Amino acid sequence: MSNGQGSQKNVVLYVSAAIALLFVVFSIVMPVQMGKATGAVMSFLTGNFGWLYLLSVFVFMITLYGIAFSSYGSIKLGKDDDKPEFTNFQWFTMLFGSGMGIGMVFWSVAEPMVHYMSPPVGEGGTPAAMYLAMRIAFNDFGIHVWIIYAICGLALAYFQFRKGLPCLISSVFYPILGDRIHGPIGKTIDIITVFATIFGISTSLGLGANQIASGMQYIWGIPSSPLMIAIVIAVMTVIFTLATASGLHKAMQLVADIKIWLSIAFMAFIFLFGGTVFQLDLFTHTLGEYLQSFIGQTLWMGNKEWVEAWPVFYRAWYIAWAAFVGQFIARVSQGRTIREFVFAVTLLPAGFCLIWLGIYGGAAFHLDGMTGGAIQAAVKADLTTSLFVTLKQLPFYALTAPLSIVLIVASFAGAANSAAYVLGMLTSGGEMNPSSKLCSFWGITLGAVTIMLVLVGGIAAIKSLQTASIAGAFPFMLIMLGMCYCIYKALSEEKV
Image 1 (cartoon, rainbow, N blue to C red):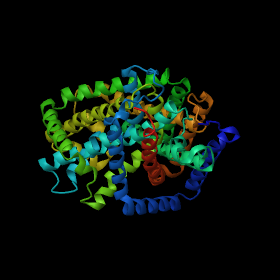
Image 2 (image 1 turned 45 degrees about the vertical axis):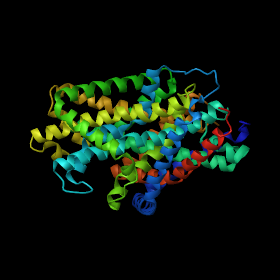
Image 3 (image 1 turned 180 degrees about the vertical axis):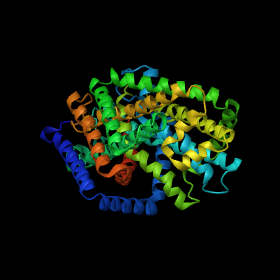
Image 4 (image 1 turned 135 degrees about the horizontal axis):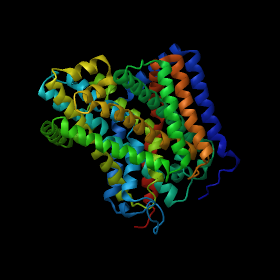
């Protein structure tokens, strides 16, 4: 198999950068029209193809576990004598850090409360609504998320390390395209990938900065404004760009370690002071319901409008992230077997996320009952402050409040430096260790794109960007369905 990219290897870089620039220019010059256009596209896709988003994730799940349980599961992601590059703990922290971004911190309190007040079925504000709300949160942040990331990561790791192809999404399609992966079709696949990555991570940067700015206003009274949000974005950009430029074994590992240990510390603290028995009861009940109805809720469309707004939205959002998260977890998984990869990637981080949600969501419900509805009131007033309002009901608020800001920054930085690193790989012809200059370019670009949009259009511009990113996930979802066929076709030729 040839992996030469020739003089065309910068095509993806130039075209992707140009598309990003054009989108930003149009968003600045015509923000209202851009918002309407992206909204219309999003409404069309979710309204007419919501079923396909749900069904696609089901196909990814069948493909992954079918391969893992088969004889192909013993195949190494690399040569037969390759050894893992990272220890098990280092591997886990980077797996978790690449895929768990702002969303988990932002929604861990807010989402259960939203569904508790307005469930898709039944009456809100009841014990049944509470159990349903937690199960919905488990469904949105649990195993399905990591199934999406894992199918992409498995295909990439197999073709990169087993077959010696470049670290590019297009490489996965070698079984059906052959050397044409180096031509226009392959370049188009990689450009779509870069587009989804740029706007997916820029949106998260904007939303994360908005939560930090709101937190600073709530905690210290510092007014939240587009300028303040832009300043927060600039500081976060410097942090994750420097981490990315240092490489996998230095600051990127440090960021992942800080994030995982701080996450564990917060979980332990909230577990101890947020109603331990209540959390355990709620978690146990919800986990049972979640596992019992796993297949059914994967494909549930009983309330079409609600499904489009929540499960379909989340599936599309994770597909938008799958390119860079999958590429990153592939990069750090060389030397693992397929079976080890599938079960570790889909179950370990997902299990951590479920425990996280059980603790945060359980504490929120417990404290809401103790305070006569303070958490519900916070969610109704401003979703971005719900975490800080919850912490305020617990001891040591003067310490936990600023540490929660650090956690948000670390949560974003862990995902953002993974994205900048992968963008460097995708736009350098598939280099496994892209130059620090190229990674830094993409880190600065991600920050600059978000800052410009916030300064011109405020949070409304970020929401337009989010909509565009999710709409852009539709063609990548089709690419991922093609990946399922390609990985199966390639494995069928292995001697096991």
